[in-house]
Image 1 (cartoon, rainbow, N blue to C red):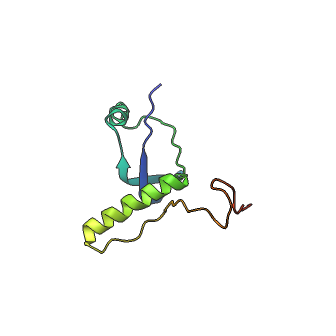
Image 2 (image 1 turned 120 degrees about the horizontal axis):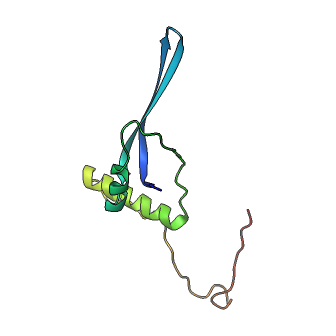
Image 3 (image 1 turned 45 degrees about the vertical axis):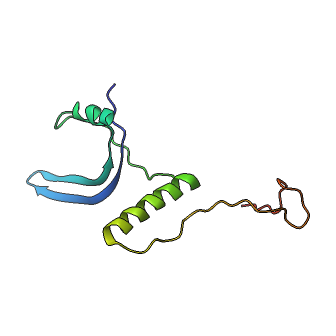
Length: 114
């Protein structure tokens, strides 16, 4: 079964309603931007033909903290390159602290429950 999975950003959604003599018709166009395709996905995508029925699933990307930091850093770097702005601070920073108030390292100091 052919399948093409890729990530993209929705650029524009057009919904067109047409009134016909015997009823009405609706056309929806979704324009994508910033499409992240690999060579493999591009080959899979090219196997589909115009007017071929397909299943479409659009869902938001769910990033974890590490992916979000990498995404933010890439977006920041791209905007800095294009606008030549000063470097902005990192989104996510991990640090190791020295022994806190006499407690041995590796011990849980605070817990946060959601």
